Length: 392
Image (cartoon, rainbow, N blue to C red; front, side, top):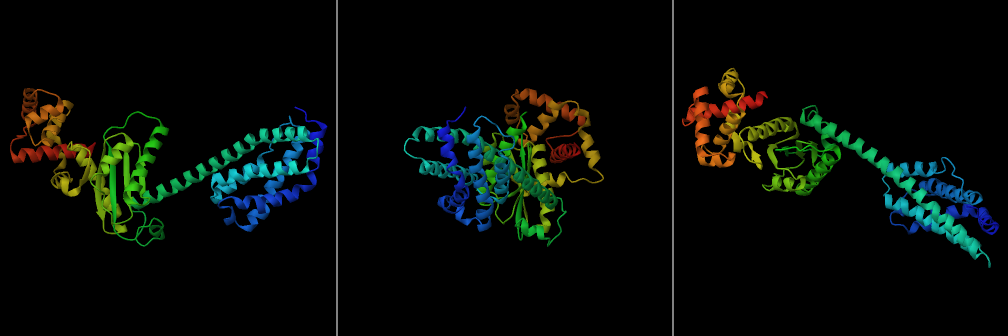
């Protein structure tokens, strides 16, 4: 596309006004934009004005050869977009400056036009509008890439801090505790999903963001999380117990059944112990076949005690070795204990006939020597299941 001599002549009349137009954009036109007034004066007078000046000159050079694609012509726009992203300028404000800058340039062309220049003005406006998608696309792409990189870095740093906190690597009184807003009692949650479907990393990230949103909304603050596809751990940096319906909301957000174990830590120095306890409570609820929901140590106090390891632990776990290769028997035992040894409830939960349940329980008793109907046999079966699960 070649512009007419009249169009090039009209554009040439604006060349002496480049500096004036840049100042007008940086100090008058852009002041109308919400949030622009808060920018430092040196940013407006130096960086914004220089970018505006470069944009005007780039357009005027383009008038001379509209079809020429100059390599790197958007480099300054990209550099400025990366700076604004790092400084935290909203993307909408950045894009509005480019749109408003084009309008100021259009007004300058219109002011320079004389009678008979109508066709030339249309040519220049057409060129100006055709150039905008490339500029805006470069700016938006660079801004979003920079913000994504910054957020990933911040997320990695926070995960590292939370991991160190949960693992006991942050000593009491450390400055990082103030950074994490941990100055008093807190609650530690262990989250787990009963089934993790085969899904790609994008789907996992979306699910984790939804879980984070539910947690932040529930506790009225940005909680500290260390989550992955199967669950993870959460620190609520205030003395705010989780509501009973939290697992329900998390399940709705994730599309998966979610179980939550909650333990209170009286101070930041007790968070590592609370995290270990919460993780163990979560494991026990799974091993015992308890349904997804909110669980506390008091809910599984006996099971927690029975699962503590000592010199007899391997002997108790070995009681179930004779049925180790029969997963259907172990599942029947676990379900039977979960349903308070009600054979009909067990049969319904497993989709079996009650007589089939009786036959399986009889085999377990015969092969292991555990007499389930007796209190001692029940305790042994629970302890053996928990200890085997802990070994896995």
